[in-house]
Length: 188
Image (tube, rainbow, N blue to C red):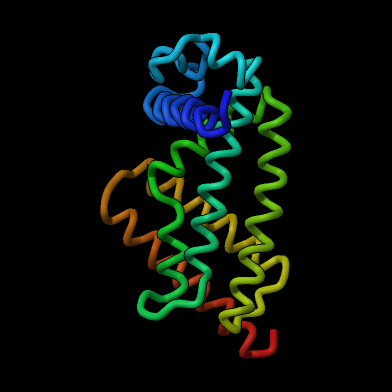
């Protein structure tokens, strides 16, 4: 199969799998269900993803790539919106819903657990480097705190599902970035 056709088939599979995960959660992520949703034969799914674990790991990888790309965009030097506002914008309800479904998968899927370990490390490295580019030296604990706060706020935003929750997440993230900056300025 040509690389172009392969990419198209895998793209269909991934789009269908992400949609099922988003709408119905982890139990919907089966090879027969993904095949039907993608409009493909199940043999296509098993050719590229021989086991359900392979499929779940690939979906988790796709979600992780999107999250990392969000951090890269938010931490890039930019004018206009403040850094705290941009960081709060990473945790969209859709992204959070997908990540929460995968958190459940991490319990039984070693590949997903390993991906979350790597993702945590990568996000914290990106966060530390991005903060430093903005003149903020947060240190390891400050970066971990900001990361954990962002995750928690994204979950609360999703659970509450109201514009006020999104505004609160943005305001608290901006406050946390401001506190890290003030702490550094005071020499602590």
